[in-house]
Amino acid sequence: MTQTDDLKHDARAFFDAAVTAADPALALRKALSASPFPKPMGRTLVIAIGKAGPRMMAEALSHIDGPYEALAVTHHENDMGVDGATVLRAGHPVPDEAGANAAKDVMALLARATADDQVIALISGGGSALVPAPKPPMSLADKAAVNKLLLGGGLDIVKMNLVRQQLSELKGGGFLRHAAPAPVTAYILSDVIGDDLRAIASGPTVGPIGTRSEARAILEGADLWAKLPDTARGILEQPEEAQETPDAANILIGSNRHSIAAMEEAAKGAGYAARVVSDALEGDVDDAAQEVIAAVGPVDQPTALLFGGETTVVLRGDGRGGRNQELALRVAMNMPKQDSGWVFLSGGTDGRDGPTDAAGGIVDAGTKDRIIASGKDPKALLDNNDSYAALDAAGDLLITPATGTNVADVQVLLIRP
Image (cartoon, rainbow, N blue to C red; front, side):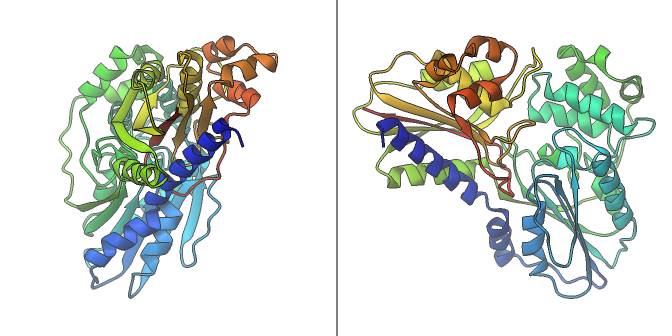
């Protein structure tokens, strides 16, 4: 193996350590060992929403005594079944009809809850798109159009979810309002940097992030307001209304920071001088790429520079890719010539990056030359947001099955003198 092959092997191992640290079943098991589920007078209604839903559900059901009903909603690529539970699959990142039907099933189950029952909510990343319940008179097509605009508008996840909450029946505490009068306990796996519970899956068991007027200001500032469907603008132009959000017990069981710490431990165990450069690598992918490159300095031993976060992409073309693929490609295109060997990996801990089968990219000093040797123009592909085609040409896509978890993205830059 070449030095680059060795570095790529190690980078992938550290990524796998990050994913393992975010294992939703282990995280929930640890939380329940400290505080078991309460036993209600009536039934336990277990609802899992998110990419980690089936794994969280399987673990939860092993801790429940007495009668229960169980429903999980996850993404189409997750084919895990759960004995004793209904598992529904829906579109992500763009909502689809299956998700709209799943949202109706969630609300129907919550409507059957009584004060003697308890509702257990298992929330993980991706939940915002998986259960679209648009406020009337919005249609699912309107909701999908809004989501597509938000994803391509360069907004961070908190701002996107503030807008989504104002247009949804379940988000921003809507889940709690549908569950009342039953008490709700939520176990949350965070995919949001900073772990703002209101932003994870758009906060179904937490109060809203902001108001309609704040949503309007965000959309106007991103030059998206005029592009919204008329129905969405109509809702956001309505006067503010006070909505009481019932209380819930919200318990955070895992996050991006846990995964970065696991990468650091794995890197040190493999003999690298490991350092967490940033646990908040956010903003536009071009700025993030420059931040990664700026962290490089002289090294006299194998070094691992670690990052975590969730960047954004402004869509300027019609290519395929995702924020991790584009970040990796931008690093490969802009990294100054180094005397040392280096490899950079950027990947989504859910195993999926944008509407592709890749989790991200894993690039090195030869990436750009391999793209050119394939007959493609890497700059033209980048300008068209076609990072998938560029990395595919170089053989540098990070391919992994859907992981069953999601705690945002992690990055590792390995340098060896």
